[in-house]
Length: 415
Ligand code: 0X9
Ligand code: ZN
Figure 1 (tube, rainbow, N blue to C red):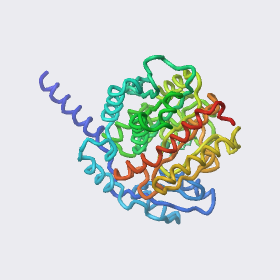
Figure 2 (cartoon, protein in one colour; figure 1 turned 180 degrees about the vertical axis):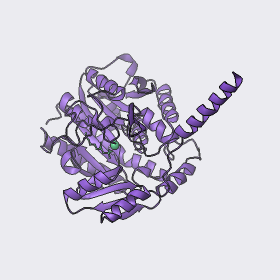
Figure 3 (cartoon, rainbow, N blue to C red; figure 1 turned 135 degrees about the vertical axis):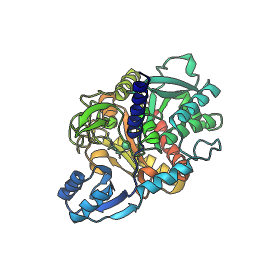
Figure 4 (spheres, rainbow, N blue to C red; figure 1 turned 90 degrees about the vertical axis):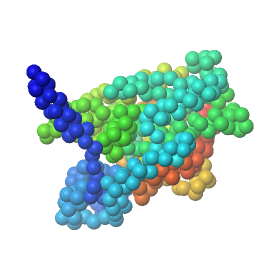
């Protein structure tokens, strides 16, 4: 009996070490390829597993050594953006070690982000409240901060329109939670002295959700730095267990259309049904409960873009003129801080058609002015943005968020 148990434990340990094995990216490269025709773009997307970015005729791809050879054989060459992905991830892991107490000089773990949120709420009870929106596939809480004057006096203030800013639907986009967390911290810090901030928090309810996809985020720390989707188990395909729904293809508005995949192993898998995932389900339920949702930003990376509906069609949305005015004002605000240029435009015509995205749902269903940001950089590091760019990125986006709060306070934002 003892021996049987011993062998069993040994087997389990073996299985565990193989399963929990960190995914290595040695020899992987990121290439930027400029194609001549849409057919070529299609062809590359067929040949490559991990597409990092597509914009017009330009595509960034993360390639295994085999994929590099395949593309070369097919006649494609590209500019090498990252010569050794594995080495860069390792180097950034060691950057990870210094802990000087500051929140925006290194990438925090999920627990650290949640602790920072809790601390802000506990130290500022007259301005900040923390609460749970719902839970993930692996039962992790999804937390939000509610910032408004005296949040404990009313569950919702009917006369204070709501603004929601969320990040991290996509796990590998590590720059996104700090930018949203910084926004909350700075609002609180400036409330006593900055009239614009004071008026905003007196007249609005500002909600921030730094991590929509906690399971995915944890997985990028423990196992695979470049994971994108949530951690839903989907079954065995090609003799391998397959996980993950792309949360930004799982929203109900336009669900199932172009620019989303029905194949579970795809990085843009839309899920078995709209809101099949607890992360999108709870977030949408909560957003439906807000009585006067005015404005919203879904924060992603990378490419430096300010995007608005539609994602599911190239048709212009109603009130495109308003989106453009606010979008360009936010663009100018960002430009003014560190001189970084963010391109502004509707999703489908600026990047690509993508159906089932959050921004389309928030505008299409809730009628709120909804944007998608794509943060730094423009491709030099992509998702592997060095930690010394966290703070500058936080700083430059802050006044753009303030600009949105300014618009949300107008009696009717359509004006
Ligand atoms: O493809 C996406 O989901 C976003 N780009 S990312 O590289 N961060 O994955 C763009 C989202 C566009 N928004 C909507 N379709 N709603
Ligand atoms: Zn994203």
